[in-house]
Image (cartoon, rainbow, N blue to C red; front, side, top):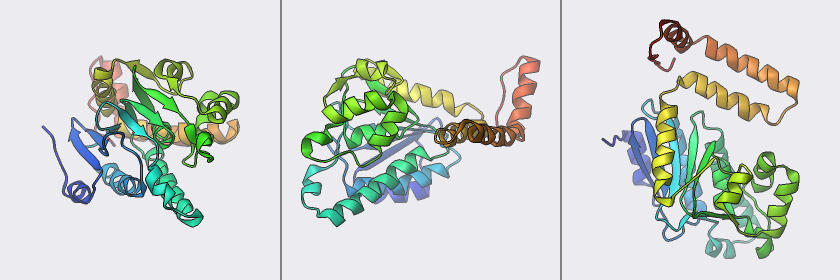
Length: 271
């Protein structure tokens, strides 16, 4: 049964392009701008608004982000909007897009991208801000900005190289060519490739599995990995130690160790 919360409901009532369904402690957020779900300033702002609401809900442990229809996850930014902007307006749009992607990346709960079609430019940047990515075998990827006389402005030049390395990142960014889901899997841009009809079910399955994990430990894992990615090893190890201590202090740690010794399934309470 789908559940809603008054605050989330009110936020989404004001959202023109986002839809949200919550079930089994998983929130599925769908960007709905058919046929290819381009990102504009309003979509970015709606993401900024809804993510904190989902962050604060006890009945949401994980989030799946996808696009409506079968043609596209998100086929880039809204070019029509960009054409109307001067430099100041474009920088303002870029600021909002950066905040939206950072909201997703820094959410304490895992976010899984269900990439059901084209993931181009800003759409691929959106996917890279998520923790995990599952793609349709028919999905296509590209950073085509160079062909438009611009460069990625939503974190693509930074998040991509942290996944694939600088050399491959430059290849994909400099040429701007389209590549397949299989290539994305080889480069570890996506975690898994499935038939198109299985993308959302597979993402929900992963999300539901993660929803059963001890939530404080999962939160500490995400914090340790994300925070440690951009510092030297010793600093990263210090971050890990702090996160380990926070997880060890929880009731869930006691329950997990006891369940292991007693050979039973643990009953985590999220604290």
